[in-house]
Amino acid sequence: MGKELVYLVFWRVLSVFIVQTSDVPDEYWQSLEVAHKLAFGYGHLTWEWHHNIRSYIYPFFISILYRILAALGMDSPGALTHAPRVLHALLSAFADYRFYSWTRSTWSTFVLSLNWFWCYNATRTLTNTLETALTTIALTIFPWDRNVSSKTGETNYLWIVGFTCAIRPTMAITWMPLCTYHILTTSRHPLKTLLQYAIVALMTLTYSILIDTYCYGHFVFTQWEFFKANILNNIAGFYGTHSIHWYLTSALPVLLGVYVLYLPIATYQILKNYKINSREFILLFTILWTISVYSLLEHKEFRFILPILPMAIYICTCTKIPRALEPSRNVKKILIGIFLVTNLIPLSYFSFVHQRGPLDVMRVLRIELARYQGGYQELGVDVMFLTPCHALPLYSHLHRNVTTRFLGCEPNFGGGEGLDETEEFFQDPGGWVQREFGGGRGGQLPAFVVLFDNIEERIAGFLRSYRIIAKRFHAHSSQGNYGNYILVYRHYLVGN
Image (cartoon, rainbow, N blue to C red; front, side, top):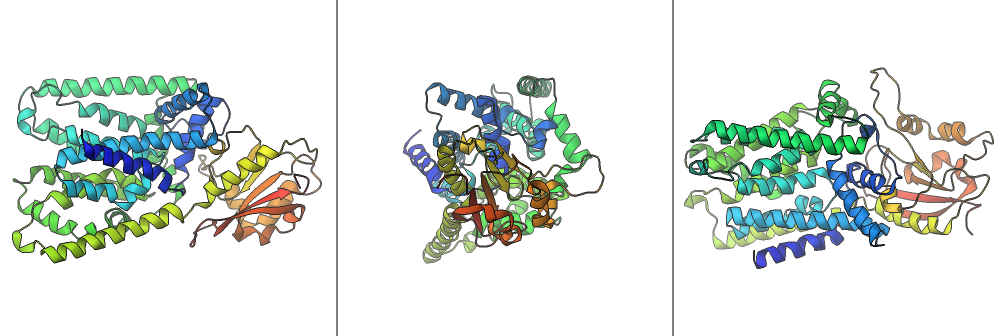
């Protein structure tokens, strides 16, 4: 390990403070919020945890970090939100360094480390971030050379693969072609290799069940529950659907940027010389296989295919092209300039501007709740979130055991028709608040109300008892029930 690792660690840790925006609810609700409840005994778990379809492995380790911070008297909200991200930064930096050792290419590593989408996600508390870093590390110890298949340690990468699949079973899709390739190209002792696969699978299943059983409080096989909910019952489609070509036409260009234009050239060269480019060929097949299978699933997100990003960058930067196609020195300078601009501009915008409202509002609430002691007979709930479901983080960022309420969005497991609470509210906000808080129902009014500006006028009557104390920018262009600004209202009985 040398100066390259130092540079990468510095860059990734710096990214913790560069990225000041939120991305998706899972960044908090499937990690930090769960860990906070494990460590401190209070918080909220989303419906997935009540139906046993999420593994506790990832938030369990974060909860250990939380307990350590609490034991040291360092469990401030800032520490609870930043410490896990710093650990992610260190892991992502190590993954980038392993990528450098694997490719032996400074340029390839530069492309990966500066890729705007990876920078945007490399320090987030998402399982997809963890999977991408671990997948990159596993690729660097994968037995690409067929002649080493009999050597000790050839299946070490499987421990990493098993860990990622235990956290999110769909990672098996990505690793299936690579593991199959490994088994088929094992030249010596194939039965020994299969036995090692079985041992890793058994050990992974054992610690996964033990951790989940401990955290859930009863025996549970989360991977099976995940399969039933998302595949057999197609619950994932509840959160939106996209066209079958979405990953190819939308997601892949976002992830690769300008390199998506080079991908067809690299693909042609790999297919043309697949015997020479065997490593590139299996990586290309893995990418196409992963995208093809994921495309069959109704619910799609950019981050779901993040783990294939290092493979795609490897293909685009390490595949040799004919000398006749190599750009001149001046053209290379222009292309480098285009690469920098097309990555730094979106990185800056999405890190500093787009969707920064949720984190800014949580800072406002921390200050206000520190001043507010409750005790008003007319007030019951401390904070009411009249926003799309899980649009903001909660206890992991407040670190205060206050009463909160927000709109629910649980899927209908019964299969019947009907609107969830979020849909009911946005269909008729005025009528909803009248039913919930009208008629002099004492002890129900919230001390603070958080909402997007797009519904402010629609519940103006309800807000007459409140005064606005904060207006924070969220996004220039919002979709669905999101607005451009997030507003914080305080009841007239609270404060001055």
